[in-house]
Length: 81
Image: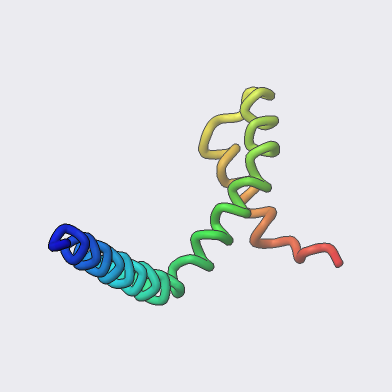
């Protein structure tokens, strides 16, 4: 009989730890919210620029030129509607 009470205490303790972990994760997400959007935008720009960078490298352009040209294109040309 006492084993049953200990099992309930262990389950309650485990549930309490899981709830605490969930609170920490949610708080971490809220804190990182201001960082997540710029990181996602940087990832999107890098993904879009990679084929151009790869093409220019295969054509024999130097690394600084291949990195700067897609970056300048992204900064200078307005997005197409």
